[in-house]
Length: 243
Image (cartoon, rainbow, N blue to C red):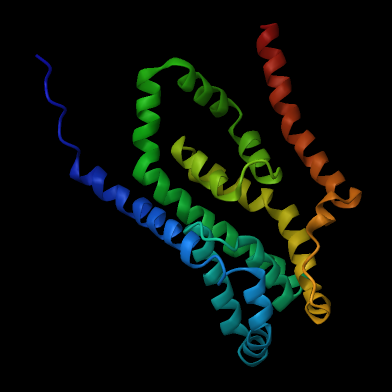
């Protein structure tokens, strides 16, 4: 006769509420806000946004950063357009700082909600069950700084997944915050720079050219950062094999 499973801890259930709320908003946002947060919407409202910036600069900065935080925290569509908007409204500098602040703060909020709701219990279950998943988590734990940094620098992992995966593996907040703030700098600089030139794009009725990421002067430094991130992992792996 099997014993019934113990009831879930009400405190654990309450911890899941923020994460579940963010998931619900993300699903609704993907359906309802895709057109409202796209490049076409920015083109349509650019005059109003510029007027607000010119008449109430501090308010426009606060509103922009807050909107960026909401977009990232709730995984809404439009993060790339938001970064372009930062460049369009505020220029490369200080626009890139506003973009970095919004993206980092939003990522931290999503990370904290997901880790509190699922990360702690999931990590405990993985450690208790053992097996390949536990060994993978242990391997990641040995190279947390490098892996987290690579997830940010390379475009292989979508931004919202790079926020969720560390949370589900119960990574420390300090490591997540530092690697996020530093790792998104290259991409933020490029997109903010593209956004700062959107005035001419709007005049010609075109679209932003994101192929700049493939240019050698942009791709080269990013590849160099990836190599720097991978090297310590390779060195540790080789040393373990030697031992």
